[in-house]
Image (cartoon, rainbow, N blue to C red; front, side, top):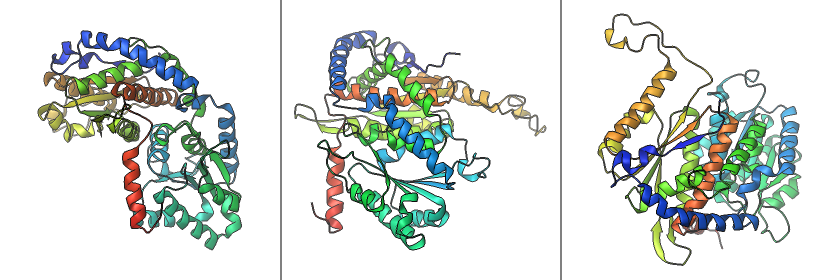
Length: 455
């Protein structure tokens, strides 16, 4: 079986949904020379290491350090792994864990988990949730991974301050090094200091560095995502191999051969030429639900910009929306089919699940259920997917279909890497900086002032 993921744009073409809503061959042909030119720009920036997300998967030394550190902590026998982080410091780990761990991982026994810890991603500062986590995850049995490049993220540092107080009070300050790992900016070489550096120095904490040229939402293949993945026993080799496969496919400018550029071109044209201002990401697998959340941050924060690279005010960007099949066929699809035709729907399909669940021949008194008897839940989910896509086509709603052969680390590595490269190219097509987030910083500054902070 082919291990590569595929992208099918046939249902987003003008031949499928009409010229008003679908991209025509001529529109794609007209855009191709620009994509080729922008490809050269991205290749040059990669060579000059302006943006480092492309090559994270190649960093053997970091992966060896991540794996060795995780092995050491796993031997200590922690029941819980708690991530203190927000945005890109949390969403990548959620996506990896959701896709590659068995469902309800936290609810099975340690033996059934093969003694890997339960995972708690604390990506918000709701006091009720955080207090309950502290009760469920006592410091003695918990490893905390605090993630912030600058060490100035208010939410994350507030969480850390509470955790430090708990550890010092219950276990003593000397125990900090056994219960806290830091992931932050590198030291030296002109890197801005992180507020987490003195914390790590004071307590003697293990410290991972995130390259300066890698932003949070592009950091899943750095220690931000890979250390938690190693602690959970995920297949890091498969993830890296998946990245390598997709990197090879994305190394050419051709829209026919590069799935990331093809998707970027279709999403860009759908927005600026067809009025599709909303990009829906709708996987038909529960394991990919958090990948949809990860995608929403990547697409929104990268492309939602007021000014272009020339300083012109443009207010660019599609609005990403997370949906889940078949669940949201019973909520959102009504809007997508009969509401404003302003959406491009990205359907993500897993062609073969690792398990088949047969629907038994029960409830004999209900003849209306005969069509389900003896079939499988797998077949029903595939039918729901196909039925939704066909119904959307009838309503002239464009759909791009991404197919994963199976939900494995190899396939997930391909998917996440492709979406990152797609976003980089889309940023260039919109002529915006896909790697900053000025709109986020102002809100942080106001919140800091309200709390009595300075600077």
